Amino acid sequence: MTNVPPNKAFPIAHDNAPSDVYIQLQNHFEQEIQSIAPLRVASRPSSSVHHVRVQVARQEVDLWIKTLKGPSGIESWKARQTLRDAAISEYFLASPHRDPRFRVPSVVMSIPETGTIVTRHEPGNRLQDSLKTIPLVPWRPVFVGDLEEAFFRAGEWLRHFQVITQDFRPSQHETQEPVPVKTLAFLLEQAVMRLTEAQAQGTLDFSLADMKHLEKGASNLQVVAKSDRPNSIIHGDFYPGNLLSAKDSMTGLDLSSNGFGSPLLDVGYFVFQTETFFARRAFRSSLHKTLVREFLQGYGAPSSSDESWRHAPEFKAIRFALIASRILGFSGRGDANPLRQLERRKHARKLIQEAKNLVQA
Image (cartoon, rainbow, N blue to C red; front, side, top):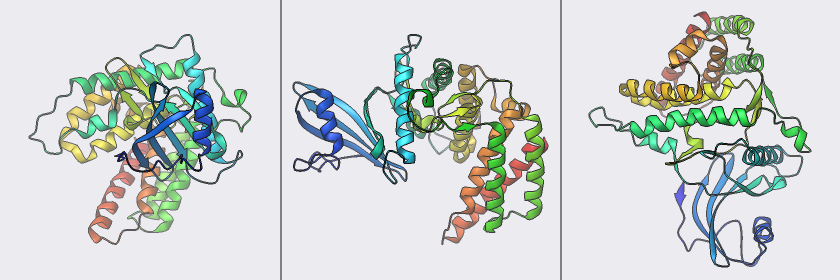
């Protein structure tokens, strides 16, 4: 996220040719917008996000405008994602049982055809940014009291989100395709497909024997990875970068990837992403385990990541699928730098071995 100079033209609304966003914002506030000041902008492969300050009459309102990239139209994938994002946010906020400590941004408006959603600004710092303040060198001290509390509340937020939305189905409320269902069986099938693709590319130290071993292990895991937990709404991209931690609140961001499946999918993804972050900070392993334990305790899951991954078959299935996705990502990266190629192959080999250990444990 980069700050935008005040004199830089706002790329969404122009004086001579106001965009749909500009026009609909005026309709929403029912008053003429005096100014829209860009504050920050972020461009990602799948979306662009603008933090803006809108001046209307005598009030200033901070908003976030997110626009998904790709083909437009009411039948497009980004229209469906935008509809789901808005629908689940509004349902969550309207619940009479919602704890005010746990929030999602209030939706001002959405334009599904262009994949645009506008939400009000929420207080707090991204949990991922707080993690980035942890020094890369082992001799510098780390103060983790606030982080531990934030990770505990992250687990609480997820549990509360799942409880509030347990009866919600977006397809019941919007004219759109049914929400994607991500069962454990589906995840394992998808994992095998990704591993097969990664092995076929021939860019990693990934033999056909390795692939056969993993394929057999995934088949065995599919037999035992049965869950008696009912499927529920899942966030779909639940990791520290999509959480805002404030003194009195925790806010979950970016619900456009929400789906329907095992409630443990979000738990597993959060732990996996946290572990990935700490991979470059191996000397902080005790801190990493502490934060994961706090998150799991806040959620109400087993108290350590090792315990969860090693003894719960459904957690194993989730982790196996996440490892497969990461291996495929490594296999498709072209890099002219020989040292980076070597590093990439080394990381991939470590993941392949971890996947083998996981399915035979």
